[in-house]
Length: 84
Image (cartoon, rainbow, N blue to C red):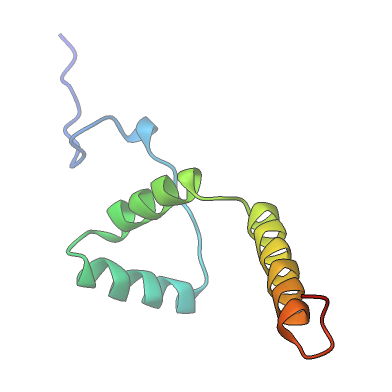
C-alpha cells in the first residue's frame, strides 16, 4: 500500500494560488492584517470579498460626476444672478 505524503496544509494545496506584490504593498498588507488579527492571506480574501460587492471604478466616477453637476446646479440657483 502506498504511504500518503504528509503536508502542512489542512486542505489540498491545489486550492491555493501564489500572488506577488511589491514589497511596499506587502508591508501595508502585513500591517493591515495584524491590525485586524488576520493572516495576510485572510486579509486579501476579506478585501477581495469587499471589492466584489463594491461599485466599479467607472461607476464611482459616474456617481462623482453626477454629484458634482448637482452641486454646481444648486450653487448656480443660490447665487445672486441665479434663476431661483
